[in-house]
Length: 393
Image 1 (cartoon, helix red, strand yellow):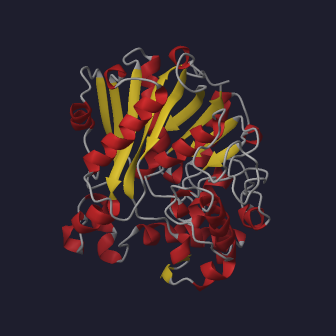
Image 2: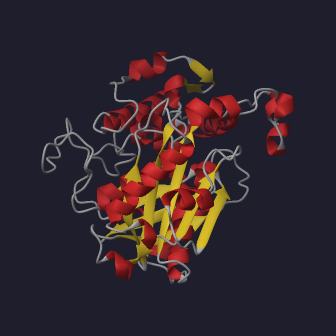
């Protein structure tokens, strides 16, 4: 047994989000403030109750600094702040960091947020020419790896060569996630998609077509983490943090991610198995990456993900509903912190509040995306760089 003193000692108590758009018409800071104020209010707290702020960014510091946000919100006492260079790998890690701060007694209520104007601002500020890049990118960009699809395509082709996975398998995953997004009022992409639509969409870089790729999004989401004891007196039923990991290392084989190492530890810390998970919100910058994450964390045997998605096991009434909000592919790309928002909604007593149900959840899949009686949710980041298990309280 792995020692896990933090298990069920902290909880997610508040969630908030902005509209997800291609052109926000406002600043990254304003987006962060809007989502954060919603999360604080959702928890039943006041701004002055927040004493810790955590966030993360990717490469070009495409966010607002936690100290600045605390100033904008009027937080009078900030006992700890953290801005981590992690991008999509650190969505769950940010929640783990907040939980650790609370459990250690350094903070009482920690605000976690991710805010970005990727479409309207990021496209203008990112380096355009090979000689403008720095860091690790200087060894890849000049040689043709100009965007993430090129970076991750080789992982997909390695898996295809080894296990026989096909682009048709990718299509089934994309179509299922779009069906989920169609039931999500805040999703960017709600237009119906067919297998033929996917297969006929233009190539971005082999083996990824346009409909294999995630959205570019302006928007923000925020989460408030508190102690389990305080959570019981707040507005919603607690969503307890069972276990989490943050940080990864080199994996030699292209057809797998760090989840092959971190997955067993994560589930041992929580004292459960993958079969105990009710719903999975899995990082999906590209269809294949979602698929390999599911394998590497032990939800599907390695090499069997293609038939698994073709048979619909990832649908809302499947063996393991996956990306019930539509994921990065169809809801929005907020570097995966929106996956945490969906997991918490699924585990709350009232369930998701932004589907098409008029009143109580009916589980009619023409209007309702709420999973039936979920108890445990799994969320992971890109490449299994971080992951978390949440439990309904």
